[in-house]
Image 1 (spheres, rainbow, N blue to C red):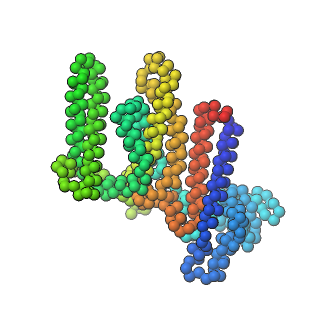
Image 2: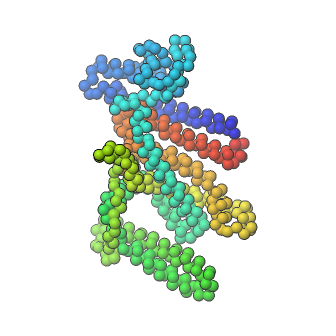
Image 3: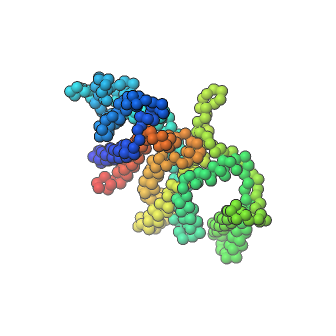
Length: 440
C-alpha cells in the first residue's frame, strides 16, 4: 500500500509541475509589459526599467521560469547579495537555512507566490482571504448535488422506463445543458428580487395536480375493485402519488409556456393561467456574503440564507450528472448475481437496494462528486460574479482583466492542488476498499 500511495503522490507532483509550466509560458507569451501596470501611466522610462529589474522582467523567459520555480519550491536556493535575483529577502520568504552550496544557501521555506501587480498585495493573502468563501459555496453545492442526485438516480433506476424515469432524464438533460450564468441570472431575478418580499405562486399547476389526483383515485378504484384491503392500501399510495406528480409537472409546463408566450408574443391574460396566489416571500437577497460584519461590534455574523441561491445554482449541473451516473450504475449492479442471491435469501427490497446495490454502485458517483468539488472551485466565476460573492473566482476574474500574472498563477496552482489532492485521496480510498486497484 505504501508504494501505491507514493506512486499516486509522485504522479500528482508531475501533474502540478506540468500545470505550472503550461500556465507560466502561456501567460508570458501573450505580450504586454507588467511593469507598465505596476508603475502606472505617469511612470518614466527609468522607473519602468527599475521595476523590470525588480520583477526579473529584464531576464530571458527561461530564467524567469526557473526563478519562479525557485520561489514556489519549499526547498530553494538563496544568497545574501541584495542585487541578486535570489536574494534572501526576509520580507518575502519565511524559512530556515539547511546548508551551503557554493556561494548560495539551500533553504527550507514556505512557497512564495509573489505579489499582485495591480494591488501590490501578496498573492497568498489574496487567495487565502477569498478561498474559504468559495470552499463553503462549493461544498454546499456538492452536498446538494450528491444528496438529491443519488435520490433521483435510485428512483429513476428502480422505475426504469416509467414516467418518473423519463421525467428525471429530461430534468437532468436540462440541468447539464443550462449554463451556470443563465441559471444564476434566473435564480437571482426570480427568488432574489421578484419573490423576495412576497411570492406569486401560479394557481394552474395546483389545479392540474388536484385534477390528476382525482383521476388517479378514480382509475385505482375502477381497476382494483377486487384487490384485498392491505394490498389496495399500498398500491393506492404509489398510484395516486404518481398521478399527482404527473399533474404537477403538466401544470408547471403549461404555466411556463404561458409565461413565455405572454412575455414574448403578448398573449392576453388567459383566465386561470394568469391567476396567482400571494404567499410569503423568500427573504433572499441577490447579493450578500456568508459572513457579514456587524455595524456596531464589527464581529462577523453568519448569514446562511445568502448561501442558498448561489449553492443551488452551482449545484444544478453536478446534480444532473450524479443523478444519471447513479441511475446507470444502479442498473448495472441490480443485474449482478449477488443481488439475485440476496433476494433469494428473503431480504427485503429496502436492504437489497440500499445495503447491497447502492453501496456497490457508489464508486463512479464518488469519483464524479470528488471531481465536481474541485471543478466547482474553478467554475464558480460566473455564479460569484452574479451574486457578488467574494470568492476566489472573483479574484481570478479581476486578475485576468488586469493581466495580473502572479495572481493568475497563484489561483491556478491552488485550484490544481485541490484537484490533485482530491484525486489522490479518492485513489487511496479505492485502494483500501478494493485491493484489485492496488495490484493494478
